[in-house]
Length: 256
Ligand code: NAP
Image (tube, rainbow, N blue to C red; front, side, top):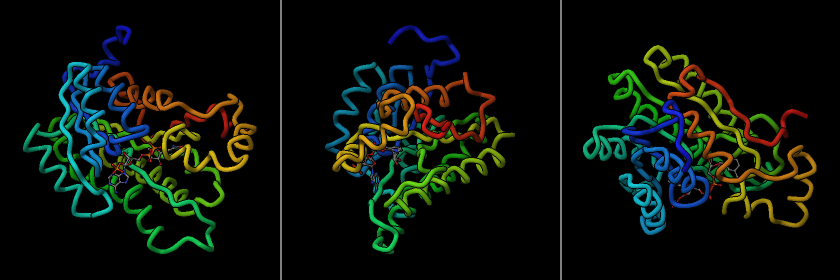
């Protein structure tokens, strides 16, 4: 990685990244560790986090993997306990784990709805709630919530998902309102479609991708790097006056 201006460096920082076993989460771990951060990788599959560990250690940083099912409301506190015992806490929390069960509103089940809210919305609150006291004590912290373009524009067959991401944007603002005085910055990133296992599963059906691309002025979907570079900015001192914002990484989709 080219030499970064010091304000973008994460040297000496510890970053927790959820959903770190595949897709966007792996690239976020790659970019943050390349910038100097040690990484706590969180997901359900230990085996799938082996590649994440290899990447992080390849940058000369430490990687602690924590197996956790974030749909369980007792788990975020347990994760925080494990991480605090091992590393004393973290400077950066990236709430990236997310799920969707694409289905028309009239067909969506209550179980699917609840699972989406539990992972996409409740877990970010519970993890932030668990780590914020340490950040307040150290008078420094960064929370980056991976939301979606779908937090502010309708996405057919994604009612539960859209509601969870709109909620996440609102939650981000309250984090800022309550914690900004303690030098904690909380921001949401709202990407358009990103080509990850989730993106591919949803958008490679029929001519869906073609139709979507007509609405993105940039003429392409986002890469995991497009999003991870924005996470780096929001995790670094370079963004210390950026707080409570929704940063759209959407190639101009929402500008039209
Ligand atoms: P992905 O490829 O499906 O990866 C999802 C990650 O979340 C995996 O690491 C998965 O790990 C983890 N996860 C799922 N359920 C979990 C649970 N119950 N407990 C703990 N971890 C869990 O998705 P992605 O595309 O990388 O998406 C990452 C984030 O970006 C999500 O918040 C998504 O909403 C958002 N986003 C994605 C797109 C897109 O087009 N891809 C666009 C906008 C926003 P395990 O299965 O090992 O637990």
